[in-house]
Image (cartoon, rainbow, N blue to C red; front, side, top):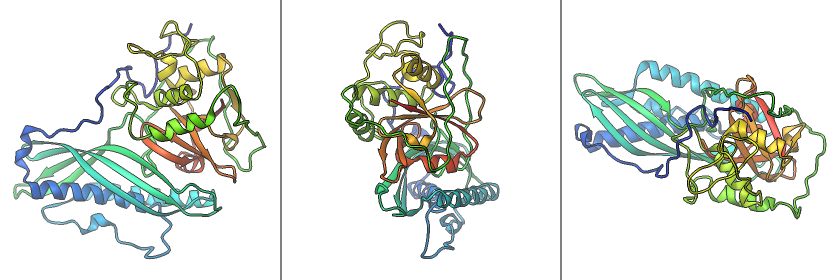
Length: 375
C-alpha cells in the first residue's frame, strides 16, 4: 500500500463541520459603522473591477475602475493599486484567450459581504465573502445561462494618524483555488507515492477532440444524478458530510459525494489504503478526500478510464489538474453540463463554482497539466 500523505491542498485532513459561520470581534468598536460600510464598498469595488475585466463590453469599453473613485477616509494604498492594475491587465489577457477559445461573458454581478472584522491599533483585518455570477454570451447558442462562484478573502487595512484608512493587502483564504477572476497562479502541493500507484494519462486540451461518446443512459451509474447533486450542493453544503475547507480543501470530497449520489459504492477498509474508498460518521478514506489518492483508487478499481482530450468529457466525468506539472495532482472537478458544441462545464468546491467551462479553466491555467477521466 502507498504510504501517502493525503493532498487536498497539502494540509492535514481535519473536517470543519461548522464552516461558513461568521462573527464580529468584540474589538470591532474601534471602527465606526460608516467606516465599516466603506470597507465593504471598497472590497466590493475591488472584486467587481476584477470580474468586469472579463466581460465583453460593447458598451463603455473603457469604463473607469470603481476603485479609482475612493479617496480620503478609505482608499487603496499606492502599492496595492499597482498590484490591482497588474491583476486587471492579466484578467484582460485571459478574456482575450477565452475569446480565442470561443467563450465570452456578456455581463456580471459581484457582491461582497463582511464576515468578521478585527482591529488592533491602526490595523484592521476584514474577512469577506465574494459572490460572483457571470452570464455567458451566446457565441454558439447552447451555452448555459450563467456561471458563478463564492470566494473568501482577508483584507488588511492600515490607518494613518489622521484616522484615514488604506487597503494594503488582499489574501485569498480558500484552501482550494480557481475562482474565475483570480489573477494569481495557485500554489501546488506535493504528495508521496510508491511503485504500486497507477499512473494517469495526461489529456490534451486542443480542439476539436476525437469523438468519444458516452452512454448517459447506462444502467451501472446515474450520471444525471451526479450532475444534479453537484449543482444542488455547489454553494450550500450537504450537512450529512463533513467539509474540508479549513482542512486542505473540499474539492475531492465534493466530487466523491457526487459520484456516490450517482451509484458509486463504498469499499470499506483502512483509510490509508488507496484501494479503499468510503465515508462514514467517523472517518473518510484518503481516496475519498485526497486528489492523488482518488486518482489511484479510481484507476486501480477500473471505475474510470483516462480520456485523451479534456473536450471528450461528458456529464459525470472528472477532471483533475496538476498546476505546476510536478506529477502531483492538485485539484478535482466534475462535469455537470456539456453543450451540444462539445464543451464540458465543471462544477466544484474550493473555490465553490457552478458550470465553469473547461475552456475558461484552460485559458486561466494554460501551463497546467490536465487529467480527464471517463466514469
